[in-house]
Image (cartoon, rainbow, N blue to C red; front, side, top):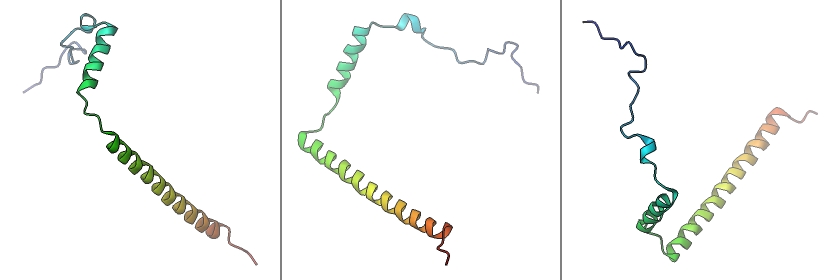
Length: 87
């Protein structure tokens, strides 16, 4: 059976269900919504915040040291392989 081909090339485009210009709200209303959403957030306590910050800093330091060591080892290996001492 043959498929029907639309004659209008734009007929398969997604149509908006709500027109955007009528739905626009004022800037003040937008900020009121933001403040309302921020009030729903469960913020960490100071102890949790300090603990999480400490974990992040330690993780960054450990990963930096590991990457530095890997870089140093690879650099020294490649220097010895590519530029061997002659003589």
